[in-house]
Amino acid sequence: MTDSVVEVEGLWKTFGSVSAVEDLSFSIERGQVYGLLGPNGAGKTTTLRVLMGLERPTRGSTRLFGTTVTPSSPELFRVGALVEQAAFVPHLSGMRNLRLWWEAAGHHMRDADLDGALAIAGLGDAVNRKVKTYSQGMKQRLGFARLLLGQPELLVLDEPTNGLDPGEIREIRELIGRLTSQGATVLLSSHHLSEVEQVCSHALVMNHGRLITSGTVSELVGTTRSIYVEVNDKQRALAVLSGLAVVARVQVQGDGLVMELVDGQRSDVAAAIVSAGLQLETIMPTQRLEDAFLDLLAAGNAAQPQLHGTSPANSIGAN
Image (cartoon, one colour):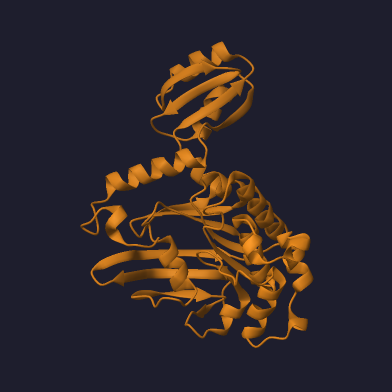
């Protein structure tokens, strides 16, 4: 038995001579909001397609709720997936689209959580309008309503804000927030790092089909070597920190000090400040997830040889 909702173990997926995913492993626990990050060609969409039974793994395994995934796995009925863009019949209303999709799977509409899905999607009276009158953001919200009809235990979302304007992105982010506040388990692939930082508890960074790193979002942001501190005496702290072997450089910035670490951890800096009799008020990384993400990709590219014999943009057509 396992408490993991999603388990990916030693996953490889190749298309001919091209490797889209190479030896990828991760797991997602119930209630986590997990972000899957990586540039185009990283293998994100391919990973999700294998997880949903849309592609067969070349090697390795994927499990949902402890069961190995196949195209006919009953566990897939416990999953709501929005992989790539949601498609609808444009000349029909949003409500008619929802009914046709649900009934096409052999379900009775009385068994659908229609009220709950529409409440979370926030479409209002627009659900009775023809889909061809919808904005892209409204179509995405209708896509969310569709996947929520069955009250899924896991949501798999592939670039849910791709192609949306800033206002629509905010609407979808708030929608995801409503879902997570109800305890939903979410696997989210996204290019919008600020979105991941705001809605995800955990994240995985991959590139060229391989895992770069994973952990909580706060841990990933904390991988930066640049930190900011506020103390009760900036000048004394400047003298103390300038003499630390783990600090490359330090300078006053606003109400505090910014420094670059060459070794050690933030805890080493905090200990030195307290030992000097200073009062530590704030200590935090100066970078956000976007900066940490780019640093991790750069470090990963420097540490690994080119794996596919092609540029990342040409390694595979999908993510």
